[in-house]
Length: 222
Image 1 (cartoon, rainbow, N blue to C red):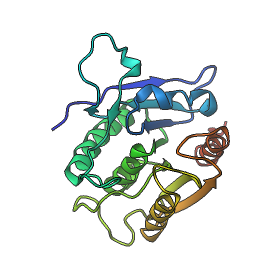
Image 2: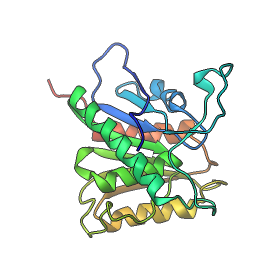
Image 3: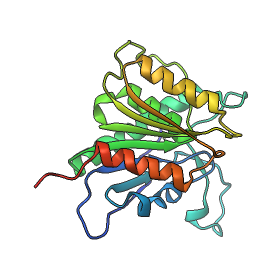
């Protein structure tokens, strides 16, 4: 059992947000990393949380903004998550998501990078109707779990944007492609975009994310 996730939000400047985007960081990072995308997604409210696994030894000297976290542990083999570890974090993220939905009515999206991308797929599988769409950056498909249904229509109609680097040296491009195909098989409306990049977020890839969000979370008509 894990406690409530530590989250922080960034509001748009000068205008009301069109919706809320909850972001999940990658392994060894923290919530402030993806909040740095705020200038590129200036029409959205961004919320980011630290993963529940603290990777740093206790150190009063290390600033919180430099601390490292993870969402789940691995089962020895690279990129093979421990199912129970993923499930625990999924429940924690969903608890946060429900509280945010209550606090911030309106369109609500979930996105993540690397480990956070796998978590995004897993949360969408468990509660697909909670989200207006998912954004997966350099992620891969979660391990099988009874709580994540595999019915053909499990993700029916759910918009998903998946972006991946063709030169990714940590999560191979083929795994990102395969994950997008799995989501399609479950009925999701998947847009898969490849970029000539490594395991990273670039100006080009985040511009694609902004364009997709602009399309799926348009301004309110007056």
